[in-house]
Image 1: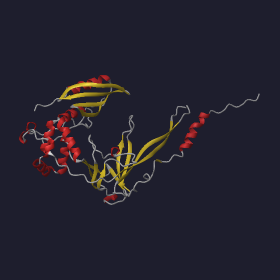
Image 2: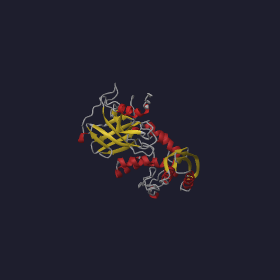
Image 3: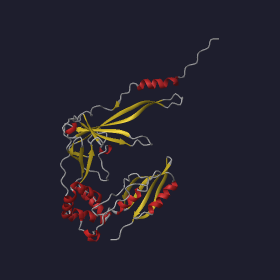
Image 4: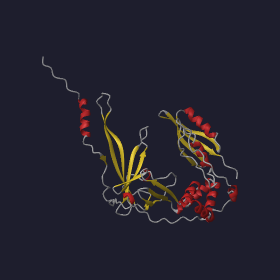
Amino acid sequence: MRTTPEPRPVASFRPIVALVAAMGLVACSGADAPPEGWAAPQPSPDTAGGCPDLRGLYAFQSGEGSRFGWRQTPMLGAWRIQPQALEILSNDREQLKARWVFTPAQVDAQAVALRERDRRAFDLWKRLLQPEAQAEAIATEGEARYWDRMAMQGPVPFRARALRGVENFLCEDGWLVLLQHADAGGGEPPVPLRVAVARDASGGLVARLDEVRDSAIPLWAGDGVQSIPLGEKTYRAWARWPVHPPIPAWVPDWAALGGLDTRFVLPVADVVAQPAIGLLDAAGRPNPFAVPERASGLPAAPWQQLGARIGALADAQRSIATITLESGRLRVEGRTGSNADAHALLAAIAALPGAGDAELREARMDGDGVAFVIGVGIARPSP
């Protein structure tokens, strides 16, 4: 009897079809040139080492059509108030010096907020800004160090940044390439990012972001093989920042900020240097909430000191992601290995010097651990 051969399973061809289709993939996804209508980039080796001369004042907000902003680059510092502009002071192949600039209105608003939140810290900040104290400090330690120290005590008109050649950036083909590794999440290795910056024809900055990812073809053959790796693939995006007009220099308006309350200011002879607090956590890693040593003798605000001690409690089983000040209390967010450890951390925080009442506001399962939110009161020193 003549039999009809059984049809071959279609699924067995799918990996081959997918693989053939993948051969048409290009190595770089995204446009190789900026979007249409943008001012053309002008990469040029104007400084030592083939780096473009990027000196100027540029808007913090990226221009229309941009696919990323400064927060996706390694140049942004850690503060809550968004700056108005980026000023690049100098750059060559060895170093790039820049600063984020705040408007006078922003600085005044931050000062008023500090006064309402911590009057003692506010008055210490005002004392440092007195013309005599300011002139003496700048003459002794230099202007850059003075403003760095001021930024740790209260609002400042700008925050300085310095990037080192090779470690933080390279110069290639007339572009300055910022180097960064972004967190890929899920325990995966960091994702390498390259942000190449140059001037454009309008005098602003233009940048392209190249993100390298591992690519693969998913399979549905049912043979246990989930994908075929294709190696690394580069994804490209563009951004631009227009030139920003000059920002007026900030001059303290003491009439608006209020008079100095001498009860909260120590005589110079009685001031004791601020020791470092919590430089490392329990696992020996750098504590991002640490308070460094301050030879000036002006202590950190009580909430900063408490935050440094809380950050030092992190270890291999517990991580602390954020510590923020909300309505006179600290909000601590992070993750522990178990619910029991979240309560143990709560007890450890409550026992810290400078801590008031503490409460576990939230504890929920997160993968194989527990995500938590802890609220902590701040014990105020007597005036």
